[in-house]
Length: 280
Image (cartoon, rainbow, N blue to C red):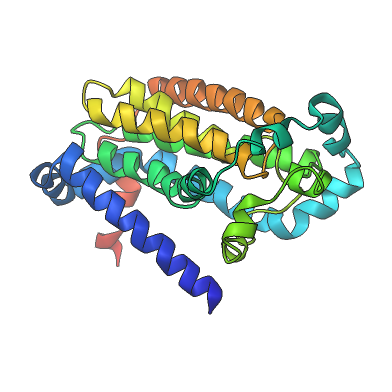
C-alpha cells in the first residue's frame, strides 16, 4: 500500500511537469500532429526500442541474481573509494539546510524521472526520428554498461560505509522513498551513478537539439547538474560514482550517435512485419 501511494505521488508530479513541458516547449498542436503520425515515427526507432527493453529486463533480473555473482567475484571497491575520498560526502552534507534538502529530494525523486521522460516525448514530436533513436540507444548503453559494472563491482554508498559521518538524508526526511528505490536498485550498486550518467546524457542531447528546443537546454542542464549533486548531498553516491557517471554518459552519447549514423532508422516496416496482419 505504501509503495502504491509513493508511486502514485511520483506519477502525479511527473505527469504535471510533463504536461507543462509539452505545452510550453513542444506545443499542443505539434504534439497532437505527432501522435497522429505515431506509426511512422515508432517504426523509425523500432530497431533501438527492442535492445533497450532487453537491457531493462536483464537489469531487473540482475536485482535477484546479480549480487550472488558480484560477491563470488569479490571485487568490493567500497573500501578503495573511501580511501580515496575520505569524508568528502560528510563535508558536502555539512552545508545542508531543510530547504536545500527538500530541493534535492524533489530533484532526485521527481525531477530525474521528468528529465528522462520529457525528451522522449519531445524528440517523438520531431519530424525526423534520428534524435529519438539516438536517445533510446544512449539509454540502452547507459543501462547495459552500468549493469556490467554493477555485476563486476560490489560498491556500497557513503550512507552504508560511513553512517556515522554521512547521513542518508533521502530516507531520513522521506522514509517512504526507500520502498520505491528498493524496487529499482540495490545498496551494492552505486558505481557508477546511473542517475548521473542518464541525466548528463539527456543534457548532452539537449545541447544537440538546442535549435529545436532552446528552452529545454536550460532546463536539462540545470536538472542534470542538480541530480548529480543530489546523489552526493543525499549520501547515496560517492564523488567517484558521479565522475564515473559522467564518463559513462560520454561513452553512451558517443556510441549512440555513431550507431544511428551508421545504421539509421527504419523508413517503413520490414516486409516480413508488414505482411503479418495479412497472414492471419
